[in-house]
Length: 275
Image 1 (cartoon, rainbow, N blue to C red):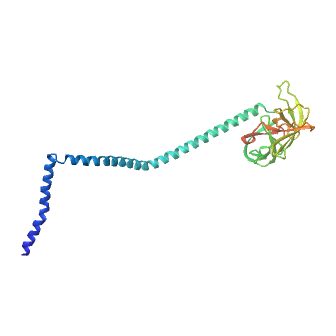
Image 2: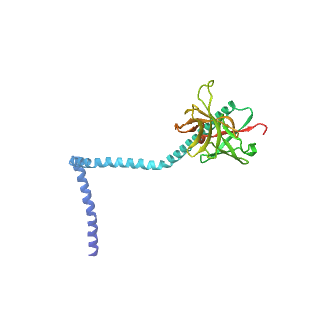
Image 3: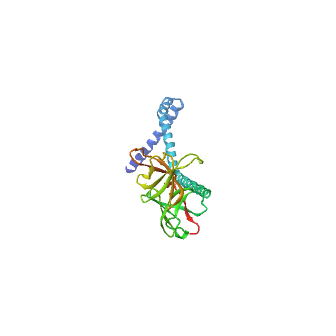
């Protein structure tokens, strides 16, 4: 009796397989005679956009991960580009500095006073607006009181000389007092001295004072240093902001320096031969 029940159970296990087999044959037959064409078209209509969207998403995903994979290469190329640009700027700056230095040297050689020697000096630092630090010192033979020039332009006077560097007091310093004269801007043959004056530094700029009221001085005339501490005939700049008060006996104004002290790279220390 038990054996008979087991055989029935085994027959039942084969039944679904047999049913599935005949069902598959039926589906193949129905498909071959075209019964499922409408159904397949409907499924294609529904799944077509899904397939297209899935393909686009897959492509974008692929591109995204490809970009991520290349980010390291992009970063390396970008960093190298920055290094190349920095090196180019350094090289260009070195060229500009050499160009300026050569121009300064040529100007100095053209305007050199044969009674003096000139030591080319590099500007190392600026202390506020009043002073420069240069790389010429006692070891180079300079001393306090020597004058820094650029061509025929007055730059300042050395007030503190170390072994390797010196401190230069600029005309804008409040401690700077110099005698000067004012020269007309006429052509070389007709140029003449219009007035004596005193030049001193201030927080507002370089002042020029004690100009004769009836001297005929006007804005744009040339201020020339003529002081026993410095020497003669060093150009400082031009007159600007000249006062027009008729109640005073003298006129005042300011000096527009011929040199921009902030842009100075080189100066020349004038040393008298035989010192």
